[in-house]
Amino acid sequence: METALTTRKPRSVKATAPRIEELTESFIASQDVRESSRALYRRTLKQYFNWISRGGYNLSQITRVEILRYKEELMGSGMSPLSVGSYITVVRKFYEWAEALKYYPNVARGIKSPKRKQEFKKQPLSPLQSSDLLKYYQGRALRDYAIVSLLLRTGLRTIEIIRASVEDITYREGKRVLLIQGKGRDSKDELVVITDKTYLPISEYLATRGKVKAGEPLFTSVSNNSQGERLSTRTISQIAKEGLKAIGLDGREFTAHSLRHTTIVNLRRAGATPEQAQGVARHRSIATTQIYDSYFRQENRIKNSPEELLDSVY
Image 1 (cartoon, helix red, strand yellow):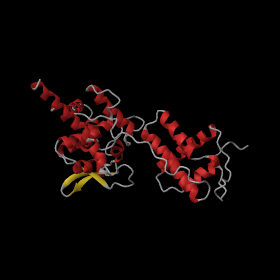
Image 2 (cartoon, rainbow, N blue to C red):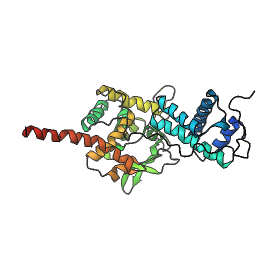
Image 3 (cartoon, rainbow, N blue to C red):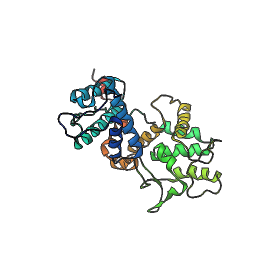
Image 4 (cartoon, helix red, strand yellow):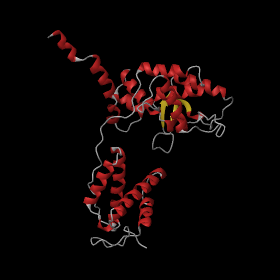
């Protein structure tokens, strides 16, 4: 028995569209994206088609008005602008594809993703808080200290740390570096410089593992169920959260990702140029790096507040 999502030929197109399930899989198969993105596309389209069904619409009857209504409902559901934007992007891609095959007109053309405020939800640590966090781990598990130190001094993401292997620590131009598989990358074609302060805890930790082989994970699990295997991002997040709580930073805005923000902000505090900070963060656009400047601009605004000048006037 056919549902409200049964597809039928719109008046403005000639081709007969397949049923919804076939339509979804054909669209996803045509996209040149990673497998994780395919899964996201599938979930996103399923929600969109369910919304159409709940509204009693037929896919061939959808117009720009319904797309805008769908966008408004997503925004009113409590989703972040970033999440809503990703949902709308997939819907736009779907209709571009469907129009090219003459299944449906592109009623989503020109629908904009919601604007999001250029700021970060996670807060960076001050230099003093960073020192306190490192002191907390000194004398504790060498692995955890090495991980937190690496996060603070290189700005690596948790996924990049769990992908790292022992052999990825090497030399380039006479300096010790860690080769990394960055966000959205398929190979280890990026790097961060590993200073002596960064390397020492790693070296001491690796020494506790005895003779390590090149292909082994840089950091391994000590859990009974996964001993010797790569860590999960969840484990690294828990390690960071433990220390953050211990030094009084227990809010939701302080997580393992805060340590990445800390690296970038403190680089700028230490005198690094925006371009240098961008290189460490590996941001595609320097505009992303420059968002971090708002943190220490506010600090300077408070430290050198012009309002205080008025006290000498009246």
